[in-house]
Amino acid sequence: MTIVLITAGFAAALALLLGLALGFFKEFFRVPEDPLKGKIRDVLPGANCGGCGFPGCDGYAAAVAEGGDITRCTAGGKAVADQLAAIMGVAAAEITAMVPVCCCLGGEGVGIPRGIYNGLKTCRGAKLTGGTKLCSWGCIGFGDCVQVCRFGALSMGKDGLPRVDRAKCTGCKVCVTECPQGVLKVVPRDKQITLALCSNRSPIRSAIRKTCRVGCIKCGICVKNCPEQCIALEDGIPVVNYEKCSACGTCEQKCPTKIMRVFGKAPAVS
Image 1 (cartoon, rainbow, N blue to C red):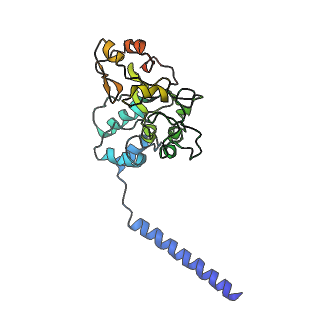
Image 2 (cartoon, rainbow, N blue to C red; image 1 turned 45 degrees about the vertical axis):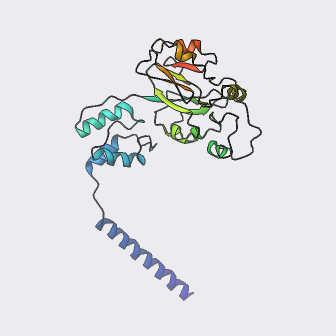
Image 3 (cartoon, one colour; image 1 turned 180 degrees about the horizontal axis):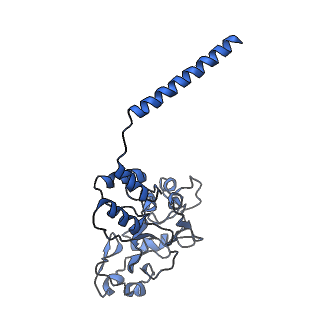
């Protein structure tokens, strides 16, 4: 019994000694934090979403303190940018609020399934085995984007496609980065723009309808009928020059598969 007590006492004394030593060295080698970085960190939202491109708010605060871009906090938006401008003594910059849009309409009953999928129920996992649908470019539908959204702005609709709550979305683009298919595109929140809701880049027109009931058939009607001539086919997908586009809706009306859509008048959830 005596040996046990001596051992326990020795262990306690050693732990105390190590604790005191660690505390001493922590203070001795502590690097004082830049007060400017602390001021910047205090105005950031603390979401640590990574939308700024840095590893969390601490990383972004350090970058701003060294003269970095004050407009990269998408979660904080213009309000945070204005506060950062005041702290850094620079002019406030304009920020264009962005929201993601799913550029695929091939949900349940529209995109033709490849077969019964029994693999890992993630988009990235399914992509490794060819996906769940005959269209190799469409939304896989397992909601990887929903899982990474820190703001609760994404959900999966009944059609198996992601839905965006614009009131909650901060435009951090984490979901865009996470999507292995690249079907999520960001568009200006408050500007009317035209977008093609199809990502099928197959050059074989006859094969498109065999994979999706509403896929872009590369007919070029949108290009031919655009009054501003601001639409071009790139890899078979209509791409709009937003600087010229007036969002007149002509391409939306003319498109035979209705994949051209005008955004800006859209509901809160799209």
